Image (cartoon, rainbow, N blue to C red; front, side, top):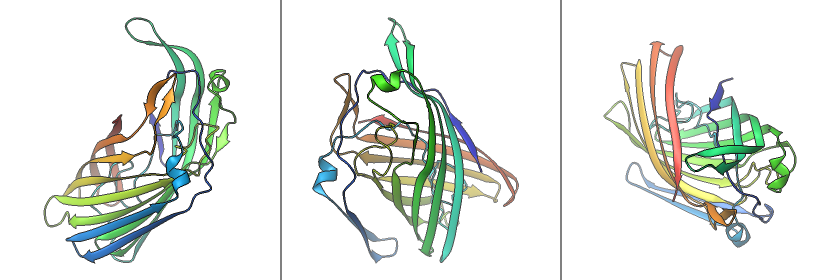
Length: 273
């Protein structure tokens, strides 16, 4: 179990956005035409899910697939042919959602909506081929300590599961040959608690491109960038606050005892597009 904490976050606003329920079907079909040359992905989702307005999701921690070596940083590694991986990761966020006022030079906290968020994330991965991997991930238990601003924003409840994420990892260049390169298309389904601000409320899709390299099985480096499409736009206090995202992140790791002990330093984030 890995405990991860990320810094205090804040949000301003006085109302929550509405959304439709899940009630949507989706189908992901990946057509593989040639190794390292062509891969086509066809994602079909119901019009009701795409027409919904996104809701605020206070859970920004999203572990990458099992066997990556890093926790939140994508790499070009896969589990290997017929490889299977499973993981359970815990995280805690301090004040991920709060009301703030602008004092002329900075934002000043006024009331807390979600003062703490603890979650357990489950991940499963399978690689039918050396260069292809499929991963499922989901926060299966999330518990929030809430403040008075939760009701002001229209939220309620403290416990909920999170959104389900499906991704595939297409390795273009293996780390053992040169600088590793992989493409990671992904799809998320709004299975989480919208009233608890723990779901995006809509189906989203996107892709990340990862670069990575391991030196002598002791030094590990990786970086990724990508784009996430969120249908519709969500607003807080009449200002667009939820929209498409430009994703980025990087990680550096050292293994004093290869395959036994490893220490990582990682950072990730996004910019609303």
